[in-house]
Image 1 (tube, rainbow, N blue to C red):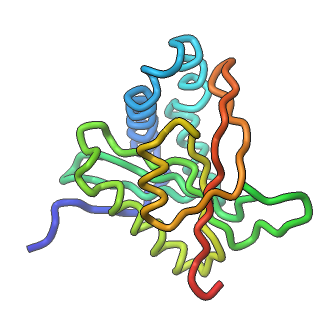
Image 2 (image 1 turned 90 degrees about the vertical axis):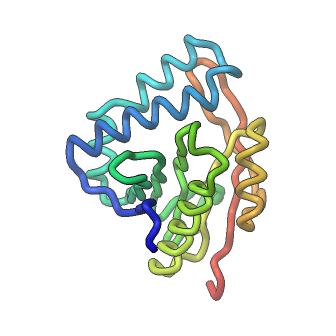
Length: 181
């Protein structure tokens, strides 16, 4: 019997963009609203989540979106960026590096294995693309996410600033080398 969970590549259209904007806002609020000011949250959400913003991201050839649907409902997604310079110093080559810019799972789907299914999809895509590494930034205070990434073999290689409204926070940069690369 097949699973009702379906993970697929996103198509660049206004319907998908609106769904991504809605889910992105919702999951970001659920995860970070309690530890940030409302003004900073509002500024970040306004600047990063809206149907037009997500449509432009979908149309950018360097981005790939993996969508997780349970039946017809979008319950999670991953935004990936090809040739990411995250964690590199000047002069280092970004080709072959895939960045996980977002891995969002609806709050009511946390702990169900959906995040792990999306991560397996990301790593399979990285293998297909012959990536040398997968990288990401994660807030230093997001212990749950840090533990999740560690279970998949990601290791800290540095840190960088992340601006949430007026608040400058620290993201840890994590990296997972791909086998044989």
